[in-house]
Amino acid sequence: MQRLVRVVVEADGGSRGNPGPAGYGAVVLDPASGETLVERAEYIGVATNNVAEYKGLIAGLTAARDLAPDAEVLVRMDSKLVVEQMSGRWKIKHPDMKPLAAEAARILPRAQVTYEWIPRERNKHADRLANEAMDAGRRGGQWEPSASSAAFTTPSAAPAPSGPPGDAAAGAAAARAALAAARSGPDAAAARGIGGAEEARAGRAATGEAVSARTPATAPVSAEAGADTLFAEPASATGGAVPPAAPAPGRADRDRTATAPAGGQGWAPDMGAPATFVLLRHGETALTPQKRFSGSGGSDPELSPAGRRQAAAVAEALAARGTVQTVVSSPLLRCRETAQVVADRLGLDVTVEQGLREVDFGAWEGLTFAEVRERFPDDLQAWLDSPKAAPTGGGESFAAATRRISATRDRLLAEHAGRTVLLVTHVTPVKILVRLALGAPPESLFRMELSAASLSAVAYYADGNASVRLLNDTSHLR
Image: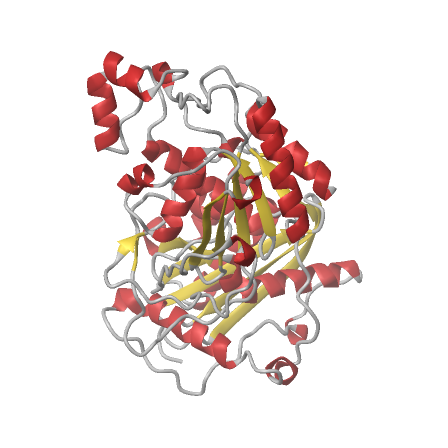
């Protein structure tokens, strides 16, 4: 084999119980061909997801160093926690993580390794290895390479990626996506000797669905849908949409750009059932009809009698559709009350998520728009002009809220892949989630109408695409 100048490491870990019986998997790939060069997996006893993920990273980096000590290494993982911590963007606070991160950092020179987050759907090779390791541990043994069914079939001669050397990983990713599509026929699984559904892992700690910064992808938007199509499955991840004519702003407000696929690649393959977020704005409070600023820094009002009637109406509508599997709520009282009414009707519990809270409007809390314009005209104009401007008195800017909400979205997507989740939240979080799904500019936040107790919906696919399925549906209130 010719000398490798770069390799790709994909790693993962899981715990059945978090903490519970845990294992990891790692694979070293040739970025030009997608060929599997090395596989590693091990059952590690009782541990958490995060410990298992770090153990997988250490195993993958060690295998890459032993195979090609001078090669550049691109690490791809679906753990946002590990990727962000090892990239130096997040602090490592947990005492169990610090020694593992230090060990991983010592394996290869820092300048030789880069990290990239990928959706879990694109990390199936390492995921399957981790599950095989956990299965072996359950039987009282250890994973053996001869028992591996995780490796993807690779072509005998894969075309070399075009473009500069730094594009090799993107070329490999595109080739692997094409292979996945080719393998989707009914006889493909049997030919690879893989039977049954992949065992799901419980209690994922952190990660989510987003467009990889190195992988060409589109951000298509479906046509406006009626309430009766809220939870219908589109024919494909593209939702039948036309690709955007120009690059659109990407997710997570790093203004990462999602571009159309390169010529000849076509649409990305359908990656299965999406995670669907049904976005419910809470019912009315006493402040709602007066259109007063009511964020997370104010009086935390309860639902009004009208708001309670609205909550009951939306609960009946969602019960009739019968597809919501999980209810997650902002911590603010008006959302928790709305969520509880719905959850009681559906027979579900309510999980409170701090990241779904409304923006803190600072000194504007409880005021009308006209009152803010009169008292704080310059601050209001700055807020209207720039998403980085915060409300008077230490409020939260839209830019800061976008970072918080996109991180919450990623975490919830990782926990609820392929499920329909009701998020009971506020005007700003709903608008931000819709804006990010559309790839729309920040000023679009001022161009959406969201009524109290209205429903919106966004479907998120494992290949990175998102489709806005509904916006401001109030038919259940009529």
